[in-house]
Length: 165
Image (cartoon, rainbow, N blue to C red; front, side):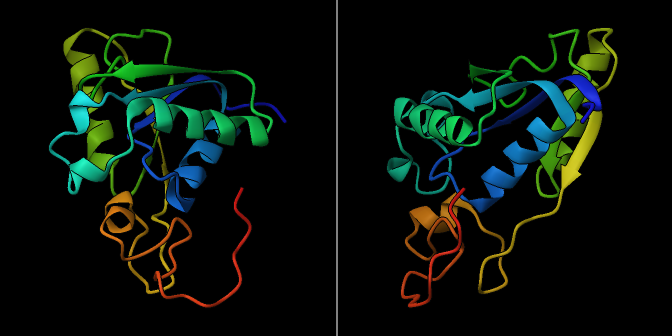
């Protein structure tokens, strides 16, 4: 299958890699020939909800690499980022950014920053928010709070596990 874009970017903390993260990453690899993944530094996540429970950068990197390997993805580069925009406002060759409905506004901020630097805005590829079994969105914050697991199940769930990868 021919990829729609040569170079795409996706970014995040990717803490407690969950179904929403996996859907976002799968979409990036689906549409991009080369995927640049911005992974937030430990310093950048200090103000997130339940920040003290966020896994260290190296652990999140290891989990991300495992997901990439298990899925057979090959053309990627993971870059540590220290700001919300990361490198997306300075890498001229990027063509698209992959976001969720929730983070769409962040893509608009990236594009504004690119335009201010004289770069072409990125096409925005948006995926829907992945819902938990309770109907809320799956989020790392809810996982860190101990309310759901990475599959979106309440922690007292007794059902079978959905496929992990």
